[in-house]
Length: 150
Image 1 (cartoon, rainbow, N blue to C red):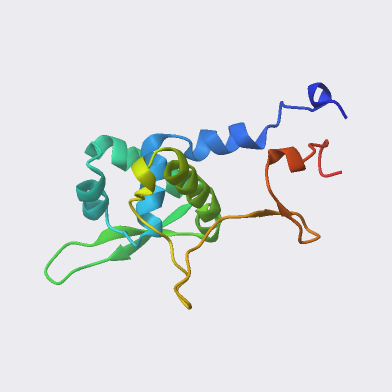
Image 2 (image 1 turned 30 degrees about the vertical axis):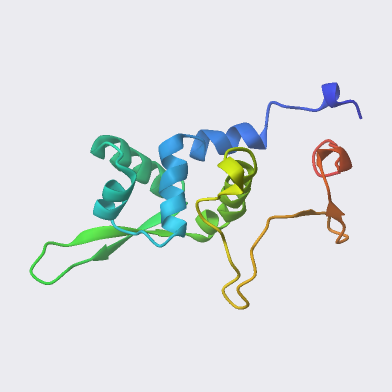
């Protein structure tokens, strides 16, 4: 099928970008994957304006990517922390892909700011594209787009 005949009116890339494609949303997700849960910590680490951070967290909660969980420190009022949902955890490969691209094309002299390592054996983690038959794909040239799940 010609790429010109594919229906782009229901594009999954555009839909995903509408939900998480803004800089602060992706950075909130990065921090959530690194274990940050509380508003004050997101604010301190990211340096995002409070109103922007509040808006992005609310949007990620509304989209079901994060969930608010109440907590209360001794002598303090009840607050909420933000935890990844299953839907949020499923975005991890997306952030790993962005990180690997940045490491490859933006890191000077291969000096990457952070490595991901397998918790069990300590080996570096890399994202790979595979088909359902188990073949590893080397590039986009190994993929053929077809209409709707065919």
